[in-house]
Image (cartoon, rainbow, N blue to C red; front, side, top):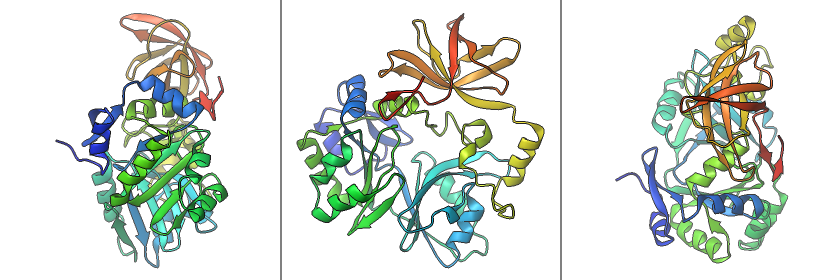
Amino acid sequence: MGQRTPLYDLHLALGAKMVDFGGWDMPLHYGSQVEEHHQVRRDCGVFDVSHMTVIDISGPQAKEWLQHLLANDVERLHGCGRALYSAMLNEQGGVVDDMIVYRTDAGYRLVVNAATRDQDIAWMQAQLGSYQVQLHERPELAMLAIQGPHARQKIAELVTQSRGTLIHQLKPFEGEADGDWFIARTGYTGEDGLEIVLPADQAPGFFNDLVGAGISPIGLGARDTLRLEAGMNLYGQDIHQNVSPLAANMAWSIAWEPAERDFIGRAALEAELAAGVQFKLVGLVLEERGVLRAHQVVRIANVGEGEITSGSFSPTLSKSIALARVPTATADRAEVEIRGKWYPVRVVKPTFVRHGKTLI
């Protein structure tokens, strides 16, 4: 038996197919993964993401420590409520994890991946040194993600007036507290929406309210196809400790200035840049029948080979798509080996759908 979120019994009551995900018993789907995918793209749906880890950072040197720990710079968070995306790197420039960082009244809040909780906390504690910083994990909190073009409007009608006002005021990549709730306008689907962190004992009642209002529960299956269409990395597949952010379409999340900021992994990234980055993350589109899957070989004529990191059928595009790490010189055509045969694929920017619009 794996770990369970406060919504486990509700998932069972709703008919969810449960699977192991990073040691947690989580819903894969509630009947139709494809229909759940379309529901988020066309309207909105709610995900239980209470398995993710929330860590609050405080102390007089919290900012300085995070500037050393992360590749992005929390100095960019010019006011409370602002958020940014960042990688946490090892000394070799590999990605220990990726996360969202919020600036709060009390310091900072990190939301990190569920499957990497132990390694993340161990790594953070190992980097504390003499910094005057406190790490406070928040296992008593639950988290719901409500995503889709109508998400904010529908949620604002279900919550208190002050929370509804906050929801309408939030800009993308902002998050603020209202009482014991923390409401953020972020997500992992390529659609607008909210992530709400709330006390675990309040989560089942609120989840029931959402479902009662016609907001469909969405499982991990649709979450994966949604994030793949949006070109968002999945830790353990597209990124891991042996992959540099420069080879993972994450260069935009590295803050190189000021030059004197010595974040962990900086020297390795600078050496990689100086030598020439050898690989890049691209999108692939299979124009023929078939399914692209992780670890399939990608062959580029006169250039070399790469590998698919994530692949699936895209419900929005009705085609098979993938993210793949390929040699930097790769242009717009390649081939993928599927069951011993080679199939032509189109190479595109690694974002296929965003805000309901097809980008390829």
